[in-house]
Length: 257
Image (cartoon, rainbow, N blue to C red; front, side):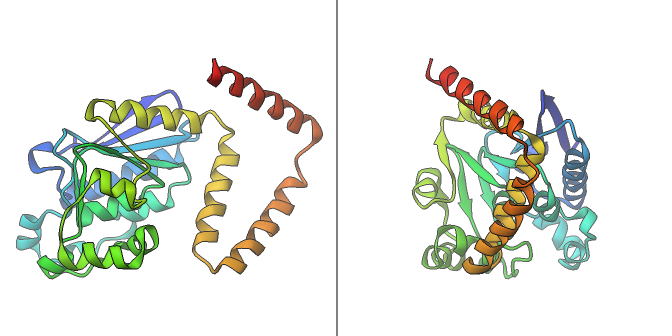
């Protein structure tokens, strides 16, 4: 299988499973990954997702250039939304944590930044080689990267094609933290489990509010928050608030002990 899905309670671990080719995104792998993400999104028993690559060399090395050399770039550009893995990750209602275990190059970089949260192994490295292979990005990297790390840093990476190491990626705000390779999946799964322990409907609505607000000017985003919070909060009764307050206090005590 080019993509595997394993369950750990309410967490799904989705793995790109082509380690002999550095998890390169062949048309078959792209389609399987998109289908896997659509499936976990539709499964109400899954509350959070971890996305990673098999092995320690690569998260994914990007589009399979050997395949594109035979089929042409049009094969990737002509894909339906159902076979577009980045769109499937972006549209997943559940939070997606990218566990970046190795290199994330070009299209693989785009898959990484489609995730909601990134945790990197010390082996992780990022590179945007679109300019060097003569292909314009089509999965959002040219717009997302500047918003994540700043326009000057984004231009440095994208116009040079140079690699960005894990620690610098963390310092620049691209990844949340860097952990030893053997701790990557446990750390990602623990965070996913923490998220999955909250009310799934609330998590999905909050994620959507953050994403929708980030996509519009700040003033519109503030108005959007006011509109949605007024609607949602008016439906919360006092008993629910008190029960959840007590649960938050109990969780805080448990985390301190």
